[in-house]
Length: 207
Image (cartoon, rainbow, N blue to C red; front, side):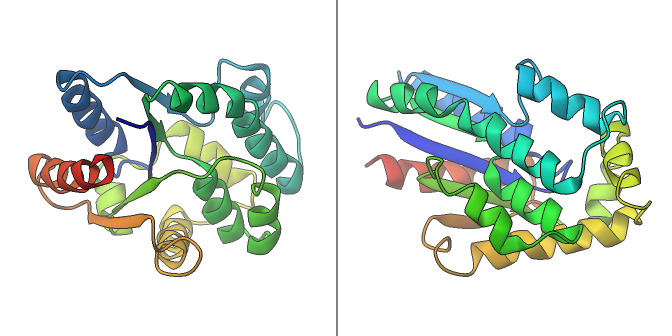
């Protein structure tokens, strides 16, 4: 079977990690080689700079931070290509779309954010775990890293920003050139029901 590149997107606490683990485990049970990654990748030098920015120990403009996020993904491109050449399944927790939606919600140009991400490999499939902002908050949205992230942009209310981000994801999912490979999943459903829906789609993509 050929390799496939799958991305999971959605608000913080949407359930991405849970669904990635369920999918990866099931694929491995089938005998597929699976590699899971996440962005930002805090273990890399670029990722460490991003972490410092999020902790407010490194002052950066939003534009500079966005370029760092893009560079973080760029340094993974050869590895992703190699994994796909080996016919592995590559699953990522967040990808360029998080940078596009979060930073545009904070006021940066969406087209500029899309343009700086153009050189990278695009996923074959993107699962958007769609949950309302109230659900995200109930699941523990207010994490330290996100609080720090918001503080750097003028203390914007979390709920207001998250609703903008949620709408930004849906706008990407429903419009060219993305809608053909995006699947909007109701993230408020039970975990196993969500997994069953994702698994059905992945089976078709692998056929």
